[in-house]
Length: 309
Image (cartoon, rainbow, N blue to C red; front, side, top):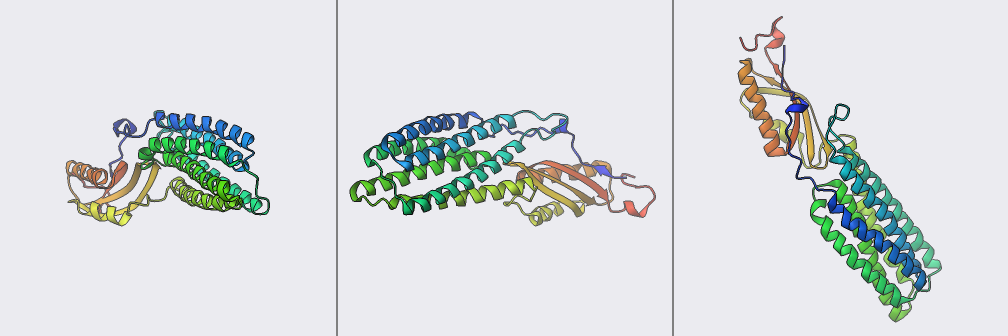
């Protein structure tokens, strides 16, 4: 006979109110959408292919921010009988999609840069610079709004990387515009574009890797199973541990299941072991969703378990 430490869904009272609200994405989404239109019109009027390309970049980012916004709204929906963890994983799916989109964007930038080495575009530098500076200001505002929330949420981080990519693009366009204005050296445009693409690609690969690890239910990279087992073994009454699994539900929410082999003792004492184990997991490792099953080491020696006699 085993004593199960599994807590029912009704007994869970985890506080997820610290998760970012969808509104944190609304202003950056609105600003990016407006700036996309401004850059597109500015690119046509100035004849700047780089501005039109950057407008296309921002259009993709607008769609990515919209996906992140609706994913965050959806993740706020409560759990139900069919989705006991709620809709938290939608954030990770969107983060993965955003990361893949960023990789495609960086590939497009590399392609355009390669093409422009052979056919540098003629650009009206003054108008190009004016639009790019406005774009940079807009992106800085968006980044300042997203920066704090991006540190603890993968979905917000994906949105932050998109806005960062826009800001870098704007800086590149400004630098290229200044050089072109004074020197007419048009090859600076593809050179800057390659640098921007490399930075975007690096962040995208990291985003895809982390999102994939969460979907594969890998151990969170900042946690160590050995450290967790070592701490749990310090609890009085715990002899061994096995069949442990640790994974991430979504950014900042971690789950663990496993078996604790305990000494032969009264059931009331085993309940205290469960409480101590949950306290260690939550306070030292931030793991709030736990399913722990306890086994008495003496149970295998008798036809009937004497736990609690």
